[in-house]
Length: 208
Image (cartoon, rainbow, N blue to C red; front, side, top):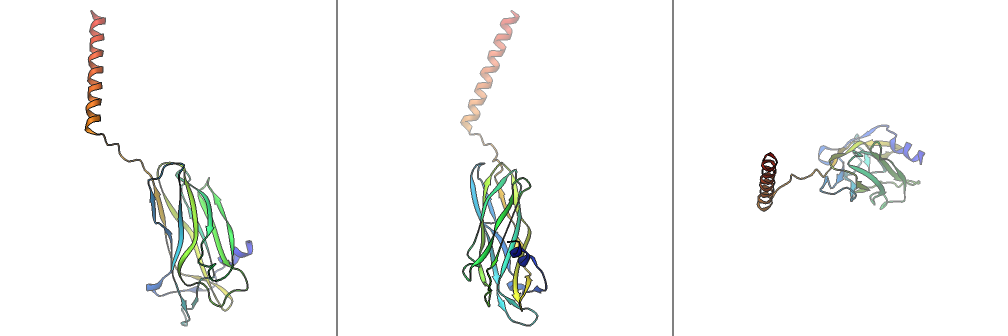
């Protein structure tokens, strides 16, 4: 498994793409909110815009491996688990690294790559790389932030990093402002008035 990660993280050259087709790694849905402590939710790590391009200087033979490191505020959410999505597995069997998570610091790392022998072409298009399950631990707002995201292709036997954009996600469950109904306001005023009258009566009685 350590060898698997060394393959994913190796950077030799860089596979570039046209601006119109730059791959994007994202958290989907991009925003989750209004869940109480003790409830759970899942987000997908998705990828779009992976192409096979044999143009000289812009060669990309699809996706062969990936790894991500997502940070979060552990006072607001904790990671429960992370599982592999189907994007690579639809092409060929993969080596999926068990998630490394730390709910004290607040991060989860996970990755996957093809099992050798490697296919002639990697995965292309769009799909789900992984699914992460979180448990809500408190009230607040936290980014689900990509501390790192690495995706690679293979060119002439070398692991080549693919330039891409990473879009963070967010979780929030800040308490909504208290809105009092007219009936409740009248009831509170009545209680205060009665309490004040009773206090004045007892004071006068004590003085008399």
